Length: 147
Image (cartoon, rainbow, N blue to C red):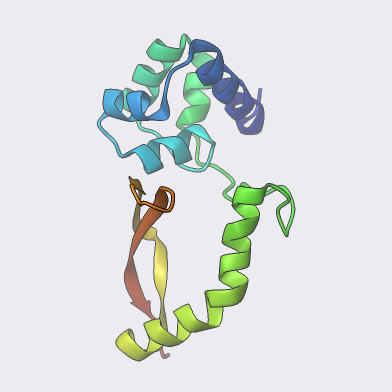
């Protein structure tokens, strides 16, 4: 079994056992977004985290070990993505990408926001015209180096 196959098995097991990502995050003491990222094969769990997930999901040792393997990051199968939720983020970047870059550069200088030293939270905000999705992203600013 490889990491991609193990990820598919883990996601299938989560659905079959009707376990929430939030419950799994709580069980290992990590954030909902990071835990979901790891369970989708995009981050590395330590021994204790992988063992606890393995226990809850009744995973075999091979699947547990694969949760600890450094992943090949990048989860989109195609660009642009066809899933409507993923496509909206792609569309958001197409429309707002140059604005995000310009504002970051104006406020911080020539550099980027890290996706490594990074956190993200997703919240539900009640609204009279329909609930809203609130996404908060925070990444370390990394200036471009001159050499």
